[in-house]
Length: 88
Image (cartoon, rainbow, N blue to C red; front, side, top):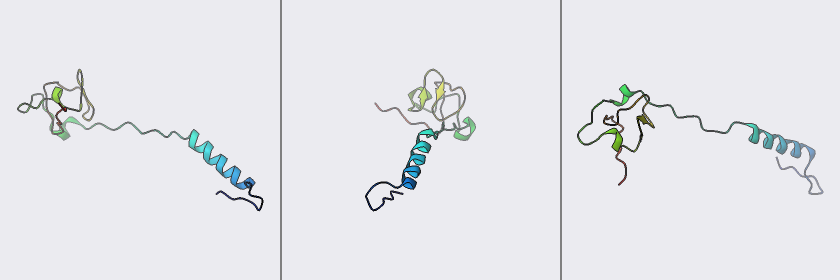
């Protein structure tokens, strides 16, 4: 697209092409869509902990009652198969 003439200047066609590309790049909504959360039943979510593993100790838990990956209201003392312990 970087067409130049004999004099080393940009051609009119190249200028229009790069201008349109620049306009498209700034006007296009380049944003990541929100990640879809998973239904609790698909990750074996339960209202009680599994041993010492409970939602409020999980990396995905968002206080007071949400999860980054599982949809709906989450019991802080619950558990699901996506449990990942918070780093200590």
